[in-house]
Length: 443
Image (cartoon, rainbow, N blue to C red; front, top):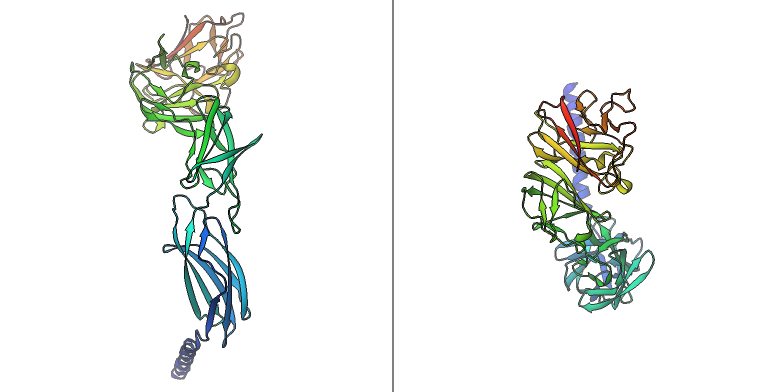
């Protein structure tokens, strides 16, 4: 019985194998043919290239016609047409508008396939060139500006602009098969096909050109800020940052900010001499310096390696403030509150001491505060009411029963901070993180 079953199984396998061989034998039969009926010798980048072809197969029904566009050996686009019957077919294939690709040759390939999967191909070389736009348009929320041609692929609108201009760029249709195009802001760069606003920025308001190159996608102006030769990286429309080592006492040379004299300079980290020269005041170390163009000041934060510094068990590192009634450069416009992203870094003085300089009526409220010290920029370790003591006659430490939560600072009843006077808050951790001593001195 077993022998009989095995013979049947082997016979079945032989039949299946024979069928597969027969299928391969009849595979890809027929005589598909392509005849190009329209001239396609040239096109612009960004065109929708129209083609007309006649297709036929005298033996087997047709299936599909594919039009493929190649830049060198790379297929960049493809369109497929169902070809159920012999006859004439028309279609379009898009020619991508890519940056940094000069005028040159491309190949359009037609691939016709019948239902037995037999194919025939025809290829044609075409000349591709970048469209010579007569003008571009800068589109902003309130107004559109004509960008005149100033050179090959180069355009500019020179107007009385504000220091910040947000808009995208439109290009008109060129040629019968051309398409209107747009250029907008994608991943901190200008890119094709977007209408997201480009954040142009100049050092001052006034008459200046906004420019764009349709070959390289390079645009200007954008403010480039440097500190001692190190370039700030863009964070968003109004913020950029740099991370670097700063040495105590060295000159801090800022470049790219025309109105630097109007910026607020944090007295905990910088000094500005009468002649305008700025020097770094903090202890030598690595810092993150963020430029806030809206509020016109630099946020300085201590770092440890590639991360923001945290308080260590031995009292070194950094101390941060989170809470109400305090904010730089002005509490009225930039209060920290309980938003940990705005936490203030105390300036490390060395020897496990940390300091923040606050001006009453400007960076600290005169009559109401409710903030505390933290081990990091965010929630986590913090200084509770039993971790900090002070002998100040102005400031008290909350214990949860005296009007403030544990560790939160308040102004004593009947006391106020004198408007216009500067107060130095110094936290001394030399006795340990659980035995911090806060001193508050006016000057």
